[in-house]
Length: 185
Image (cartoon, rainbow, N blue to C red; front, side, top):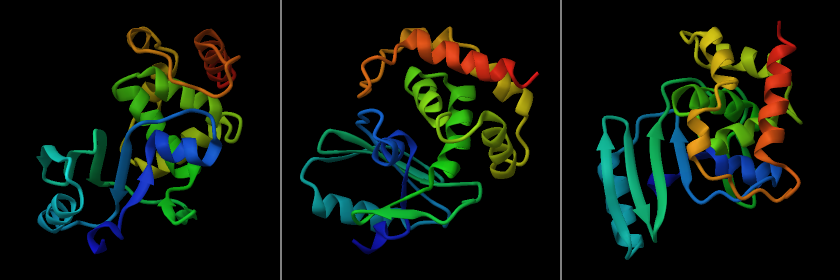
């Protein structure tokens, strides 16, 4: 499984494993280095009977393995903290994932990303998340990120993620995020 050694688990599944807040059903595997797409495709085709390449780009492969969406992506930004390992799974620190979640909200505004930010706020204050965002994505506009955090309209079309704390409602998530954004001003 040599071609997989350079990848780290990121995104919602990585957060779910580290924070235990929700179920996530896809895998985002990122690397800071270029990767040999053909070697990876050869390995995945040989290892998994239910493997399908859904799309590919210059620095990514979007696949389906045993009916699970698995993305392989070369990041265009730095890893800020040493990656961690839990039960043999290498993943990025939540402080590296938090700015990625802010970017995801600015780009697509999915409910699961807002829920992830809600739970991340229990570990990392919003000003620190924004500082990490600026450090990770040096040419990004912070004002757009802050504005996106309180734009919930697009997220309304998505289902609520399957969170373990059943008391956490979509209204609570929106209210808490709105509250911490208001504290910035």
